[in-house]
Every structure is written in C-alpha cells, then in structure tokens.
Length: 380
Ligand SMILES: *Cc1c(COP(=O)(O)O)cnc(C)c1O
Image (cartoon, rainbow, N blue to C red; front, side, top):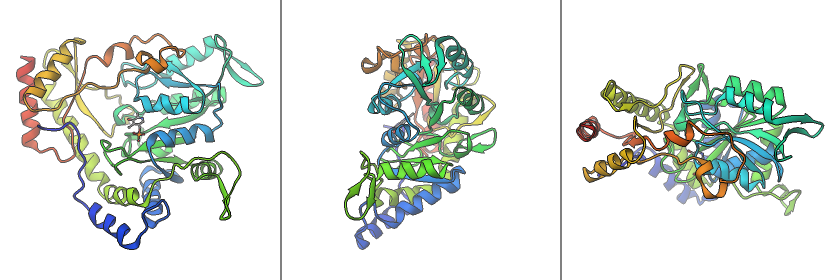
C-alpha cells in the first residue's frame, strides 16, 4: 500500500529523544521546547511563539486570548477541519459559517464584507449579528491545505469592524503570501499544528505565533495553568496546553529539514498537476497568484461529484494506493448544523469531488509515477 501521508523521522529525531531520556527532561520544562519556539519564530517571521499540546488547544487559547467570550460568534469558513469549529465551541462561542472562494478554497473576502455589511449592526458592545443578537468577536481564516487565505483583504475588513483575527495556519508552515511568511500576514495570532500527518510533526502538538508581546504573554500564561509564582498561586482559570520536551525534541529535528520537506511537497503537487493537466474530467487544486502554498496535500478535483469520487477512491485502494476524500464542511456536521451560515454553493459541493493522493515527503518518483498511471487508467 502506498500511504497517503506518513512522516519522515530519519533525521535527528531519535538522537534528540535519547537526549530527553538521558537528561530526564521529558515534561514541558526542557531545552527543546524553547529551541523549537525559536526555530518557529525564525522560519515564520513572527516575533513570538508558544508551543502547545495540539493545534486545537493552540486555537482555543488564541481565541480566549483575543477576547472571545461565551455566546459570541466567530466567523469561520465552513470548509475546514472540525478542530477549527471545535476550538470556537470550546470557548462557549459559535462558529458563523461562511462559504469559500472557488479560486482558493479559503474564506471569501467579498462574501465576508457583503455579509457583515448586510447582517450585522455596530453598537457600543461591538459588532452584533442581527438575526441572533450575538456579538461577533473574531474572524478565523483557514489556510486550506497550506494555501494562505487572502489575508490583506480579510485583515482590512477585520480592522474596519474592530474584529480580531486568529488564523488557522495548521498546515501552512513554509507557505508565503505575497512573499511574506505566515507569521507576518496581519493576524493577531496564527496557529500551527504538528499532528502526525502534517508536514512537520511532533506526534501531536501545535504552536501559537504572534507579534504583540502582551498578547503572547497572555497566551503563555493561560496555556501554563495561569500560574503567577512557584507557590501554586494561579490568577485565572488556566489550561495545561503546553508541549512536552519529548514532542519538541521531535519537532526540532523535523524543523531542521523544513525546507526539504516543503520542497518535496511542492514537487509532488507540481508533478500531479503536470501529469493530469488537460486530462478530461479532472482539474487541479486551486492556485491563486497571491500565495505560494506549502502544498500539505496533493490530489485532483473531479468534474463530477460523488459517487464518482467514491468509486475512484475505492478503485485506487484496490490497486494498493491510499486516496482519500477531504474535509466534509462544518455546516454538514451534526454539532454545527444549526450554526448560523451563509449559503454554501462552493463548500457544499467541492468537498465531494476531491481525491487526495499520496504525498509523503519521502514518496519516490517511481511510486508517484505508479499513482499517476493508476489514476489515469481508472479515469479512462
Ligand atoms: C490539522 C488541523 C488542525 C488541528 O490540529 P490538531 O493538532 O490535530 O489539534 C486544525 N485545523 C486545520 C485546518 C488542520 O488541518
């Protein structure tokens, strides 16, 4: 079986883990955590980084730190992994689900501006969603599959309305937007994931990136049980959301090879795009000219919705190739079916046509050629 996406742990991972064991620094106190945070600021251009236990916990912390409160709404593209919506729900808030742009599969700034103008009122309490009476507290753009959303446009709208921006940048490490790295795109906070299938993994983990020292200090404080001194005094309800030194050890070894990993991901995506260009019945993943995707996932978009994509995936599997669907949008998920939402002509349809293809950073050219030949044969 050629797997969809598996990690490459052949660098210094084992050596650094051995150092954790030898020194007994296995908890979140340990030198690899600080080293990983420094590597993250260096590679993303953010002023500060806080390593977390997961992308989800990083998102939850970030929303609290920018002031999201129970009862609020947070703007979210419906086409995302459920962790984005869950982090909003963990705050006692509700996602306001927006459709995506067909050209990028990210939050559509034109739809955002038009919907905020038509469906909210500005008051002393902030921006109020007229239909529900709820306060709109923040916007969470998602860098879909590692492709940055159109951040200049989104951040400008957010500033106009006084809304905070927490970017779900889970899979976008290594991406650029108009030449800028992901820590410099104007979001108040930017969140990464190092889950097992992400380009850089720590097994499970994440990080919050930010440029405002006060907000980053709050993130670090809240994520470390809000402890104010060594004598067990805590000034708020805090969270134990720190990354451990064991995880960070793996992360440091992975970050040493970030450029190579992202280079491999982009090469794999380009090879699929090239191989299937012009083939009837398929189109490539979107590639707007404002960004260079980190190409977390590769694959094709079928012209026809399910059941064709279901059949194609099943036939690939029979041929020993893992090919999968992609995110089922949030407005179709039971926990979020009642959340306020725009109409979803793009997200509601595109997810049924996506076929993701093997894209591990150590995928060989022979393996990729086999995947390409197999899919060509299936598509006839
Ligand atoms: C992977 C991912 C996450 C979640 O991260 P975890 O580390 O698994 O909690 C959140 N959002 C998006 C868009 C993701 O792809």
